[in-house]
Picture 1 (cartoon, helix red, strand yellow):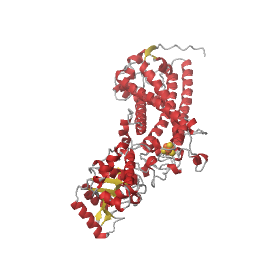
Picture 2 (tube, rainbow over the protein chains, first blue to last red; picture 1 turned 90 degrees about the vertical axis):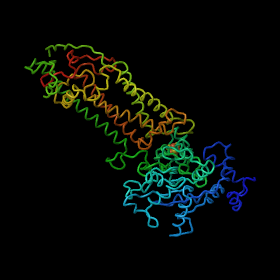
Picture 3 (cartoon, rainbow over the protein chains, first blue to last red; picture 1 turned 180 degrees about the vertical axis):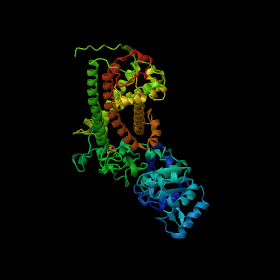
Picture 4 (tube, each protein chain N blue to C red; picture 1 turned 45 degrees about the vertical axis):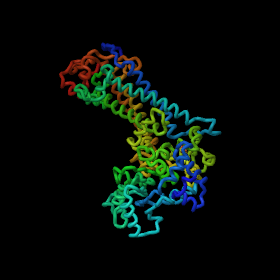
Length: 387
Length: 241
Ligand code: SF4
């Protein structure tokens, strides 16, 4: 174990009374969250302990501190606390001791001295309306802070749906012009989105471990989300999936199916359209997760979730203009019946006209206009058609 | 009652080639199949009891829906290809009222549908109004394919040919929006189905040219002059046989 000697991690582990065994277990757990082969766990452990203490600044804008809560409760492996706690958190409004100008000075110092060497974490959306006046810290608009701090960071982690996609503050009508980091500060290099309301700390930990171990970002999807956590729909790993495929659904809160653990699809579950590893890593140290305790997924990790995933307890939104509570199916059936009725009416009129035509025909030929089949000139065709 | 009606002299024309007829019926069948299963997918109304492992109701609905969708997509795409290699009645320009003849015939056809004319201008294939309607219908069919592929790609395995189509998901506004579009367009297509069957019967009745049968046999019976001056038949209130 000589390679542990002198590493920041070894000192921290020792002072917290965490054994090396626990640390290795943690690395194995993280390896599995990252969907890497087990055989890499040792390599991950080695890489983590040899890496210098990473510096982190945590910016909070239009947020509810939910992701901070999630971050502070990294409860499962104690070693995770070590890795997260010992990230040198140079700035975090909620948990730092310094306040006011002192705190801002710490941020300015880190950004100036460690430019290009720290990780910026952004929590909350960035308002852009009214020149950014809706959110200012120390007299500076959130958008300016984000531009400077994220612009000089080695990597930016947008944690939570608000920072990733605008989230709740950006929901229609979006009075503050709120945007996620990717839209507010376009062109950021090394941006990682960790959406969800709040983001799961297991994924933040795994991301940090990955970064420490491989010195680069994990593979990302089109929304900048790490594939290890957002590569699969919730539905495709859900423990209730067998009931879904069988056709067994909760029809009403508290009914037999609900008590048995049937699929929540008919209660508006958005698991099929939401990407996150909730079914695998779960929440609160693996205790449970929303679908596990009988509540449908509300799709909190998806872009525009507040606008698009509502109504939460229905499969699909209705059609605008047809009144709240009217489903697409009701409108659809109505429309098909209306089409049918319209054409039935058309059919009756057609039949009556046809009958009169036949009668007229039987009365003998009329002194008619131009005979059928007379080829008109190029322009005459349409005009001749008018009755 | 005794006055004999002289049978108009008609010629037999091969209008709908076999690819047109086959794709027509494959598209029709797959729309009905996918709508029936799709209605269940959106609102699984059957009650299934017992152990989950003993049933696969939703599973089968999805399997049928997916195979129906494959037939549907391939048929629609084949029909679009045939617009460029098929006979004159199948060609793409019959779907857009752009050529002079078809622009000229558009309003008279509409007058016929709105009872202002006794007989429609004699177009042998699609009349201009029907052609334009089918352009909209093809847009709906393509919307169905794009949203369907996007939804499927989201859960497709990494090795699946549909997995790379995940790039469509942001383009259609996310999966939940894709679902909504897919569902609304289904109802539009069902509405079109009602209209389409009715129009076919109407045209068959009024023109007496075998429109309804033509989609089975490929042949229509038309006055010879329609063949030469398609769309130019002079019609007015008194122009009744
Ligand atoms: S509860 Fe939701 S995520 Fe789970 S199987 Fe049912 S629909 Fe899918």
